[in-house]
Length: 529
Image: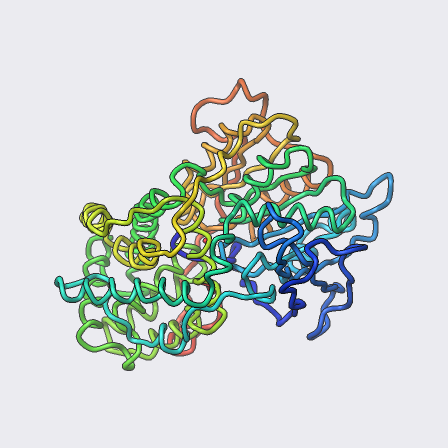
């Protein structure tokens, strides 16, 4: 997918420096399970414990070389009560490449107290990510992310060749550093790591809450280990068909639609932003701004590619729309670049953690499935998409372009679904989600007969445990006693959901006293689906 995101309805998840233990050459299976200790860092309302777990580098060779996963846990007071306890709820924020150790803390605080009390909520950094060891890093982020970068929409053959060389160079750098690890960076192996966590915790079954790419990871886990699933929540559902090349093309169209929804929102608030009262007029202003930044980057930092990065965040959450509209207006109408610079610094990750996210993203997606090796195929497909959906066609192609040169060829993805013995599954999906389009949730419901689909009418990515009380009531009911919405599977009709929640209220432009685009308040950041 386009980004490694760990965002849910305005919530930003950050790693807090939890550390794992180096495990190269160590025994793959620990004895007695992980050793838990209170996590380092500032105290919070809930007590969070940390641990490290060794797992096989190659699950097919369990006695061979091992790697370490960083774990976190918030214990539920009733989690192991024989009457009310429900054991472990494993959580994952997305990716591939997003760290998950902080998600346990957030979920434990956001769930109703009676529900959280019945689970040990466990987060983990997947293989290669964050505090797990080793953590993938392929290049120096200060060099690779140095702004302004070349325009991702190539103006000519020479510009395209330079971008292609950049993509090939990244793939070669990863190959040089990680030839022993890259063959084993797959979603299937991460799912097997999840089962290693289950075994280490002494659980016969686990429950799981996954967002974004975490829904694909959860779908693969449920396919491989259906008898080990107690509850399964998949929020913002990845389509298991088309992984990953075709999925990215589908995402190009959906992000363009969501960006046009942003432009239309700006037009509806022309009294605040003065960029035009139709989507067409605002689009003309936006693409004009992009051309101007190609000639003179804002603050010497924000060129067209950085602008794409900033406004891609708006595809994940409309919480940033008022800010992004304000800095857009300030630049176009008043020639003020400082708002764009501040938005880039606050909302776009370009540090070592972001490079780790990107390295793992590529390592997993390039290895999971086959990608075209002939650049002419990418070029023709991207030109076709760009003619209809220009917002992210070329940026997305270059984001994934190292897969055309990846040292490990893609394998055959797990065929998701079509398994017996699964409990009821809850799928949560916003209707206009750009990162994981609606069709994917319908497809997963078709693959898992016990799944029920709850749809929220908006377009943000990551719906539950945010600001929609209707969605959260359904989630709590399911985690509490397995209640799912809707009737029998045979009563479903096409793409219709089993239950529907109205969208949360749209954001509003700030009042004049609130507006200060040069010093934006944090809304939601990306880690790099």
